Amino acid sequence: MTKKIKTRYFETIKLENGVFHNLFFHEKRIYKTIKLRLNLTRLLSPPKILGLVKCKVIYDENGVLEISYLKYKKREIQTFKVIFCDDISYDYKFLDRSKIDELFKQKKDCDEILIFKNSFLSDTSIANIAVKYGNIWYTPRLALFEGITRARLLKEGKLKEKDLNLDFIKKAQSLALMNAMIGFDIISNFKIKE
Image (tube, rainbow, N blue to C red; front, side):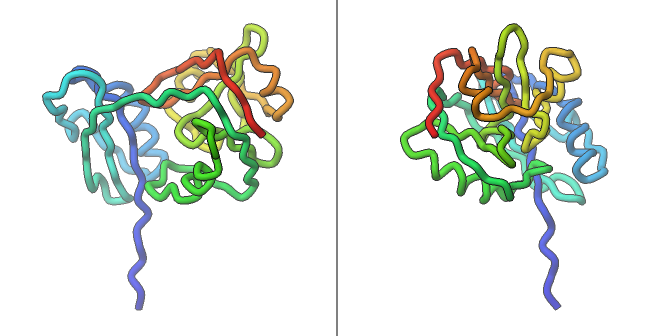
């Protein structure tokens, strides 16, 4: 009889000068993923590292398996490679990112990838994305992953969901990447390569 391998998930939590950010949204996502309420405030103890730190919490349906802390340095991203992949699925923050990693290897000389699923933009390999057109910031209606920053900005009315095709993206004034570590990072000088 083969032993069933448990699915593992992770959260990336921003820790800045000893203060954790958005724990409520991380706890909410953990509950949505495994139906278990975790009190991250009690579970996490910040190391004495100043500056920006990435706290990675690995868990499965039984609870937390591992917690690690690592100094964080933001990647500079200006060039994007268009990648089409209709069979990708990343509904939860799975620890296994092999399909995303496989797509990222196709970036060639670009900094990051734009993943299109069924002809519409879904996400990048590391963050949700928003596109500025006029005075409105749009985010893909069918994002590959429902990140906490994206969820917060949608709730606050700062983003609108829309199906975004490649022609629409090419006419954008700015792009913005968003995740727990970088917040809403606007990129005005960007280049898209097909």
